[in-house]
Length: 235
Image 1 (cartoon, one colour):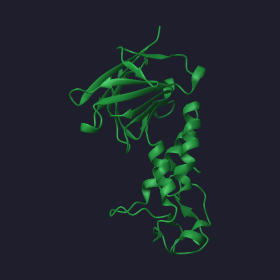
Image 2 (image 1 turned 30 degrees about the vertical axis):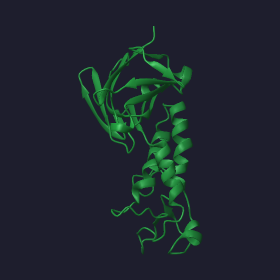
Image 3 (image 1 turned 90 degrees about the vertical axis):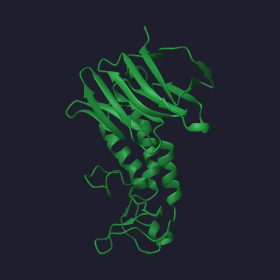
Image 4 (image 1 turned 45 degrees about the horizontal axis):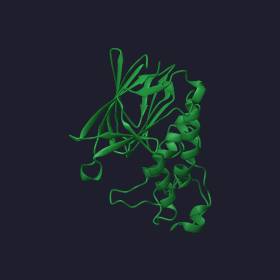
């Protein structure tokens, strides 16, 4: 999975033979964002959450994550890959093994926020703004139910509900977020909090308000369609 400033190659799993067996145009060539991109992104981004200082992992992992949906047509057709031969440069006519790649995207999509030593505050999968001592993030990934704050290795996931806004102060002592319900399908949000980087990050967080804990997820009522939640650093 290389880091190349090109939509087709950045994070693209190296595949050469699958068109020969599952493509409409059958030949050996470099395939762009075959299903391996979406699947490879799962262990790569998992490793990044364990090692949030490794920016390379985030770059290739997110490239593979987005590559899984980069070939979808306006009509909704998902091809088995994109033909890289200069004489072709188009998607294949068969869906082939597209399904596993889309599975990789669905199971892995999320918003990642980092404070890079050279580039400053960056957001993969959303919009980010800096307002004084506060950073505000609007998740825009395809699910909006996972967010990773790399500076503290904080991994927030929702079993139900969606993140509408996330904000935190630069000292990372307070994290606030707004959760949106999903109509009749989710009147409660189920929030999971973890820090996969473990002892590599000094701070641990607690809920600013008592919520019921069900199967290791905090149950948050969404009475008006939105719920405001606050995390604080544990003393």
